[in-house]
Amino acid sequence: MDFYSEYRSKLRTPEQAVQCIKSGDWIDYTSQLGFPILLDRALSRRRDELFDVKIRGNLIFNKLETVENDPSREHFIYNSWHCSGYERSLCDRGLCNFIPMVFRNVVPYYTHFLTVNVAMVSVTPMDKHGYFNLSCSTGVSKGIIDSARASSTRRTSSSWR
Image 1 (cartoon, helix red, strand yellow):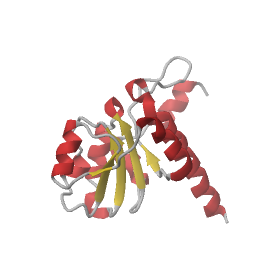
Image 2 (cartoon, one colour):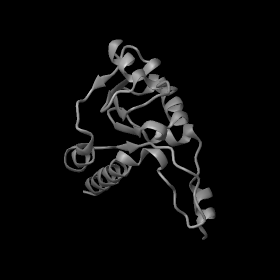
Image 3 (tube, rainbow, N blue to C red):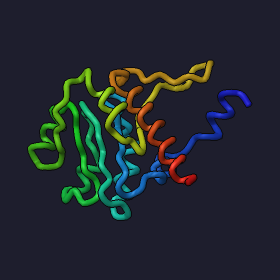
Image 4 (spheres, rainbow, N blue to C red):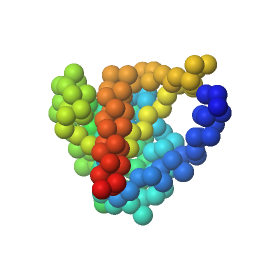
């Protein structure tokens, strides 16, 4: 199977993609321009069926529909490592927890201490070799994706026992 055929076989709509999220999960949106707008929107539509979904991000400039559509924070709890102006306004409204962090320590923190059940990031289109590019969100995205992969392995291996 070539890269493009494999890629096409894995494509999902945003609504299908967020079906893997369960109540209590930790979701990471990575940062900046990697913010997954369509996935956030699709996840916000699942508000009434999910509880205590914790979302981490940083330097998000777009509207977070999961946060804006759940002012009670019963369904989605948003946390930011480094606040954009928009995220500061969410903090002021009691809709965002600020997590103080020295930026260079974010990836080691994920590697050693955090669980990521689902990582969501926007990437560039696949190139002719089958690779995607993290574009402007490379600062922390790779570490978050690696942490999600490790958490997934732990989750899968523990379910085998």
